[in-house]
Amino acid sequence: MDIDRKPAIDAIVIGTGIAGIYALHKLGNELKLKVRGFEKGAGVGGTWFWNRYPGARSDTESFVYRYSFDQETYDGWNWTQKYASQGQMLAYLNAVVDRHGLRPLIRFNTRVVAATFDEARGVWAVETSDGEVVEARYLVTSVGVLSKLNKPDLPGLDRFEGRQVHTGAWPDDLSLEGRKVGVIGTGSTGVQFIPAAAAVAGHLTVFQRSAQYCVPAGNDQLSPDFIREYRANFGGYWDQLRQTRIACGFAEAGVAAMSVSAEERTRVFQEHWDAGNGFRFMFGTFCDIAIDPAANEAACDFIREKIATIVTDPATAAKLSPREPYAKRPVCADGYYETYNRPNVELVDLKANPIAEVNKRGVRTADGKQHDLDVLVYATGFECVEGSYREMRIAGRDGKLLVDHWGDRPCSYLGISVHGFPNLFMVLGPNSVFSNLAPAIETQVDWIAHLVGRAEQLGQLTVDTDATAEDEWTVQCEHMAAYTLFPQVKSWIFGANIEGRPNRVLFFFGGLAAYREKLAEIVSSGYAGYSFAPAAFHTPLRVPSSDSVATPIA
Image 1 (cartoon, one colour):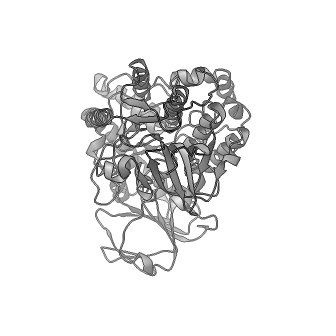
Image 2: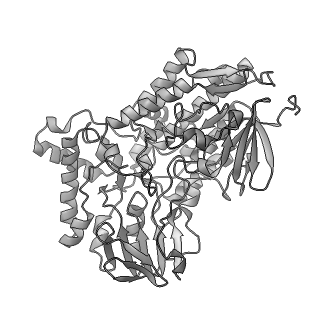
């Protein structure tokens, strides 16, 4: 083996969603490294490229669900809705890519199937679906939290003669106009899809696996005054946002629910119900909805009363009313419960009446009823966080596979680094911060670029984390999760939406501000948990200036 052969590329980025786009910009345009991106799709956008189902839109408010590094693209963007639609998000991300000259760096329609660390040379050999092997010193995986589709395993699926489609891979040629449509799933996607589909379908059958606490989105236009003020104080908004827990752009509550009267609780809940947004309702009403059972039950009672008031059929309202804690990822959609008042919409409670089989005409439930369908839609989500990593063969030191290192307990240091896998940096890997994804992504990519820039300046081109740091971070995330009510329900944020898989901690629930404080603490303590070691190529590259790596969490 020729250990003196230097790779032609400095860094490879897998995936070109919000994270991959920013990683290409940060490493290529700012650190001046030679970078290449690989994207399995035909275009950039990640989630917003693939999820084109009717009703698809962000459920985080648009003024904070974007990049903070690119005010110029925003200033030229005519975007006035409170929530950006799928099409708007995709157009925005394409505009950012073209403004910063990133498109020539990306190879589209190319899936990464394997990545192997060559310890003697300190490089990653990345194998693509077309058989090419490309080498680079640094490997950044921005494969998405919600990327690998989760499809239900139902008897008879291959016998259905209609159209089957997952919302995460929606085809351009599918129209629901006048069709008999069935949808399985009422989570974040389902609550958006169901009202949109009901408006055009001849008949819509909703197969509900778990009842959902859903609050209105409040999908109003942003006022011209707000947009002017936001643009004038763009940096200030984002500086303030990074000092919050959820980073969704609203004032997070500091008052405990049980510290006020029942009348005041109702007033606060109603105010936030009228304003809209799931995260705002969970974290903007009272500070302890996610941690105190009594506070949580008060929120549950309020939403259940809304369901009973909105849904005209008492039996349907009862099916739609959850009995478990309000402890899944909060969701919102306008008109969700109202949709069940439409004459063309039918609700099937799968807990009481499960699917017996799929047949050529549609779905037969356990009560013997046949539900004839033209289209069967799976709004059944994804294999969260780890799914895409299990589709690639990633081998680190001594040939150890990443999936073997994880086993049944996916782990990392900071959601970014994995012991024994040097120079592999994950964006939103296991135990990343639970918050608005856009500022979380920017925080992590800034940190990755900081580590890479420091390694380049030092000429110590292998960056690894130690086992103790990884274990301690994993335990800290587990303890933080146990302090909340989130583990008490089965949800995708714990990977429990995959059949037969138990709850596992996959996020750091301490919030973005605390996460950023941890990064600052690591720098001040001399990079505790990290080691920088020389590789075969130890001549440092020139980076633009020390400023580019000195302030990773500014």
